[in-house]
Length: 201
Image (cartoon, rainbow, N blue to C red; front, side, top):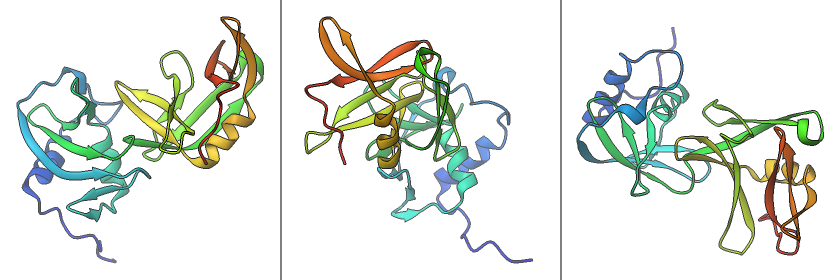
């Protein structure tokens, strides 16, 4: 049997988080919004803009561990992101968004169209009122799309998905002005005013 080349977790805080997660239910996202433990400081975990998780500067190469930790992420009122269990709450660093949307599925056309996304940690997210899409300007003045995953946590769409999404866009008038947006889930999801649209590349 080939040994696991990944070294064991030596950080005590990371070990405690892993142990706590072992007692959680295996189905569905944990109810992190109901957990209010004392803040235990900062842990040296960073989620890079491309969705890669780092611990003490080294990529975490266990996809199962990353997926597990991703289920206990929470966005705090002050804008910080924490890993939270019933017993501990620790702040981490997030360069952009905590998730990246890496795949998109489209069914149907017009208002009846269904659009869904899969994130880098295998969350499946439909585009609808509970999971809206938003666009923000990047440093060059272009626009980057994000889809809401849960709570205050969002997923940044990859560049290729951004192109695919724009291909689905159509122009409609909102308050007397033309907007480009997406028809899906029974509604129209605005992207930007047509005159201002410049997708970041």
